[in-house]
Length: 343
Image 1 (cartoon, rainbow, N blue to C red):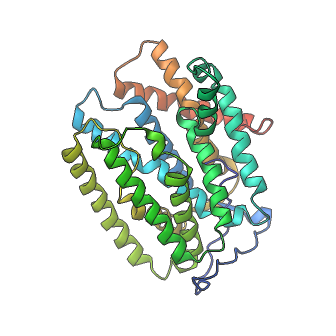
Image 2 (image 1 turned 180 degrees about the vertical axis):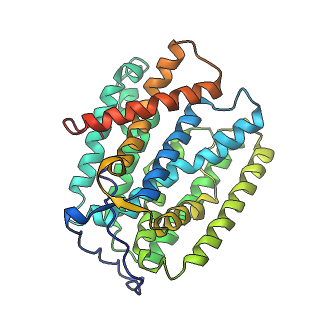
């Protein structure tokens, strides 16, 4: 989600045949700095996804009704985190061309910095050193994403020699296993623990890998544009059906992290938006959108506490208030990031 874990997008490449599936495609050389562009479609998507994460953490629409909240918070908003991982995987080979050190170092330094920023919220809740170690390994609240991305990224780097098809099959199999595990927990067949699913192996790695596979197939996007859009529409319908089925089967009070149909929906969403070609020079607002999305994700729990302290409105109004505060707060973080490595 951070600016380092994604890459500035070069101008679209012409449609050419991909590298054989048994060998990863070699990324093209970066264009000169003056010619670099941002993908406005994907960067705008990041903003929307970050605001959906805020919806999850504020319990949006709970005051409207149980089913509206379920459809938004346990349905639509659950697209956000898998798609963030797919986006990071989409640019992974380009970002790690010189090795994974800078990519991993940035993710881990960002994680440690924000764990320190949230220290007052998580340190007092820990009972002993074992609890502290557990929190550091899995991350406090929303910061699990950063440590899981670093761990999952290391796994992906070690498996980077796999062909595109085998890697996609492995990632999909793990994602299916995570979905099954989640449903077993929801059905009380095994003890419920979100960290069984929400971790590097079961969550981060599969979607990072699917994003990497989509990135390798990028030269074929223009050739298969119609098929990709049709597949995205079918995946969206399958996702809607799955959300309704899950709510009826398990009840609208369950808490979910993954849906089966997201294995197809998230990579297709990234592929179709990337193929749309909405690009602009990486300066001005266009160059700041990705950083603003990262800032929203990182700062919003503090703003939830602020809004609660100021009167704690109903959940939907709380979501709107936190989202409204997050945008300028994130823009400020982007400015501060020029001097301090905050994003």
